[in-house]
Image 1 (tube, one colour):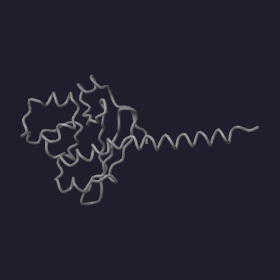
Image 2: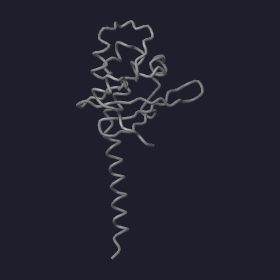
Image 3: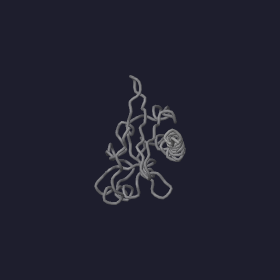
Image 4: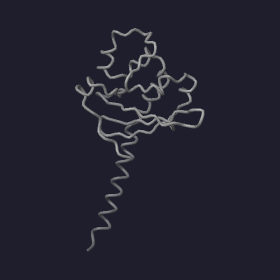
Length: 149
């Protein structure tokens, strides 16, 4: 008896089920990204989305940062106005996850269409944080995996 065809069917079904489970497992991250986008241009309000290490490092910085660049917060997003940020919805967010890491691609509206902007998020416990990629974060949390498309 030839077992190749049934085995192949089981393999394909397993991949499809795993993909669905992975996508639905990142609903909390999608919500967190959308919440971040509503306050991304407000340094004080967006601090809660930074990793605990980054928040501690920035604790001495007041709320008036005057253009301070936060690694990982992506200037293309943090410099947008609230009106533009409010237009970004769930359909503009693509999540590629692996374990406690996720690459989130955000389609940012521009005057010429939409521009993809990538961010990296890290889950610590049950909460997702924007990962900046600084040497301190790499030492404490490690580096994100490679996300192949």
